Image (tube, rainbow over all chains, first blue to last red; front, side):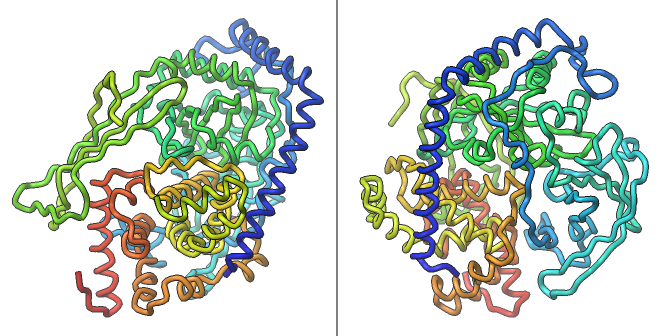
Length: 407
Length: 183
């Protein structure tokens, strides 16, 4: 346990280091300013031109080999620390929490399937980690390729301290670089579980696109737009903007346009959401079984940074503020009408109603802007909790923002 | 506005002792709360420090719409979720650092102190993360429901329901452990 003073020392040391880094970065930017500005403008202009004149097939997909054969931008982003991206410090992996949905209690060791207990292995310098408990993680048998090798995975049960092992077969996944993902079939089981290499470190955006065959595999969900909440903390209240085929083509074209860009400094991913103005697109990569169940995104902030957590680690590249705003306009983000979001009350029978004061009746919160918009979030609650457990239904209703926002 | 908002204002005005006071007050409470989210005391302590680093470096604006502690716990909550989001970094604390960092029992003794409450806190660890978080905020940090809603990014109604379910789960857990449960 750290003392107050130790924490304070750590915090102030981190602050001083940050200030020092900012000074260095500012000095570098001053030196590189004429170059940097030109690069950003060139990046936006050449990128847009490249997308619209070239390469993508009419259905928005890449070539059959999974790569992209059209013209791409021939420029690089300002920072190129690819060697730092994808590095994961060593750690001990314990079993994942497996909660009974009815009781909310964690299930016992013997009740857990192997993909909740044996979560990682190392092979050939790659550190593969099971995706089932974090991101969906099951792979269709039709997508399984050839067998690569056998592994034995070990784990320690937290409560008893006992060590357990299991054998498993490792397979390729069709069209996917095994340096990024493999499929694992545990001994005595039929299902194929997705395992991600936590040390996967593609050189540029294009290598990630090809490694995961994203042009053929990516599924795009809704676009969420952030607004400012509690100072600098973001919270989505807009109804997500659906991604139709036109918008999907725009996003894919944007990715293709960025193929040659190198990854930015890790720091950008860490601070990506610090500012309130950003929007994100939920994504799934079905072939490798990630994103279907939990939150995978490609996000864009107003500083021009694009970030994705498809490989869990926050990979960033920078396309410049203008290009992000251009994309936001093309996707209809800036046309989104603000709404009042009213979370309706639970559907409880009057006879079991107990307004015991555990929580209040009504609350209204006013939020500030994002991408030039204003919004109001209102939660209306009509009573206390039901002492007898019943099925809970929640509905959301939307209405236009009133002209006057109450304080 | 509570005194720690004044401490924060003093820090923004250049007095580092303002932040020292906030750290002294909230260090252990934040660690135990974050531990309810990430289920790893090493990582929780790391995120607690990250929360204070965020305060120290970014100096976010505290607008007084909520209590200072609500605001601070909301930042910690976001830091924890951000960390989980960047899942690859989950549990990145080096093993040798853990010897110095983490002993949950010590933190419980230092912060919670009452033996009965410590037992309760331990029983809460067997609940789902959301259940243990909501119980911790309500009964160990004494937050009102609206504050919990702000911290956990939920509506008050959702918090009320969560609290009810969490208490029910806790009752089951305590009864299983041989305790007599009183409302």
